[in-house]
Image (cartoon, rainbow, N blue to C red; front, side, top):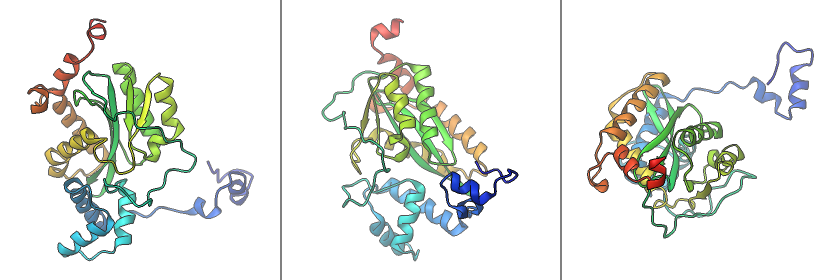
Length: 276
């Protein structure tokens, strides 16, 4: 965006782009090793006790001998993209200017594949750093239709993963997400609505709304991620892709009558679509 070799000065270019001159020279600092270890522990606690907000997490960490302040816990939670899955006192703010769509799954019986897809993003710890995993899950069959591992929480990754799922598996009736800024951005919502799908968004901190994706995250982390120490992003991408392939094709679910998500997905497609 800023061309340091341009005839215009950097200061003038920053003015024309309406950005701070200081931000041009800013170099983000790497997350410290103690913070990475703390984020890993916060991820584990959030997975086990998703109702815990910053104060409760701080108190739990103190019991474990980790002295940390509530504000620092809040900062790390924001960086990780997590929040307590319980009613909040109005502290969570939507991205400015982003439209929030109504929740459409209340009392809805989900019985067929491609009836409802759910999207979510989760934090993935590595040996030195972290990445984010975004996935599209068919709710009826638990099948992971598409996923993406990225180093940032941006709408472009959500857009690309839903576009991939739509291209490979057709159009669902409803796409359900939370109110994260990557899902409320027009860059993402335009793709969903442009495909002819209805867009549904969970209420803030409503744990029940996206419970199927939360169960997937638990499986991914305890059955693979926490057993590894990825040393680079490419290693994380390759290993998570390998796990999700196994998850879809080999991991049976008692709730699916001991079928795999792959088997349940194709068995649950409407007869007309299956014949096509």
